[in-house]
Length: 441
Image (cartoon, rainbow, N blue to C red; front, side):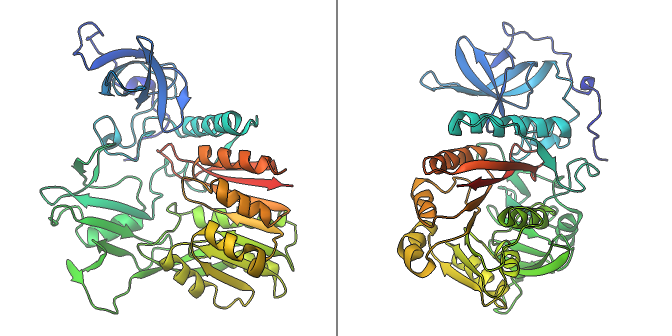
């Protein structure tokens, strides 16, 4: 049964009799303050900043200190008892992700609506603090998430076997492994594949890494153990064994099929590929009714070509799409996925290096630059190379608001202004949020 997001706050235990004076030294009573980036809230204890997980602003909690060295710049803690709950608190949708639990579900105690307000606060705060931009942010839900209670969205999950061979996940900031019997964030297709290969019930060699990949279409799931395909309870080491999955994305009402390495990068939310591809294409066009015909578009950190293919369709036979990707396997997938489009050029290599060595020669300039960098962002060196292409429009896809805000600040130094930003809740029950920012010169 999926916990609802309307359960009363009194579903949380509040019958704590211990006080800060009576509690063990590692337990402290805290008044919880504002949200901080990273899934924490801020509290203070004896003048020291404490970042507290599993709580909400305005709550009073009993928290266990997890990092409290005297030389520590700040302390960390987990709320273990809720003395005064927030009205936004609900019964946890994933209790194994609570205190002493696995990482990856740190907002499971927060209503979905409040999770999105939480993330909007973080994005706005990072823009204000790092880019000096005050902008109201609304975090949009992905289709179907409200109906599913924010669960069942991951098309890919990673597990690891503990010392007894049981599949599980690591505790937050720890190498310790907690065995699981299911994974509430996984789609039905992922859980079906796990059941078929007895992922949660069999005994693996200790330390085995297990990946389950099931496209949102529900076709051809793959289970990997230490990179080897698992089939029928054993490892299938045939040289021609299928190691890729087929993903289907809908853009402008048309289905596009991609082949992606099972252990390669792909958006994990079942709706994210179609949603982001459409949003990015519309942003690159300057609006849903805009036109990219004959344009030169540079697609950075292009992966398997999620954005490259729709952009190639949009620029037409006379336009160009230049795709740059540093991972050899992803670049190989991109070549396969874009092979029918002569207007696509694919460069393999570190983005800043390719831009520096080919940007002013083979690439020339760009009308639009699209980038979807890793969590650390593009960085100052890459931003300089992007600016050198002199694009009229930059579409920046970001999974970390702090990195996005830093890069927006770099771009502002060269005359690029933030035209718009949209944020999407593509990681329910976690603090992560996906943003698409549009910058114009």
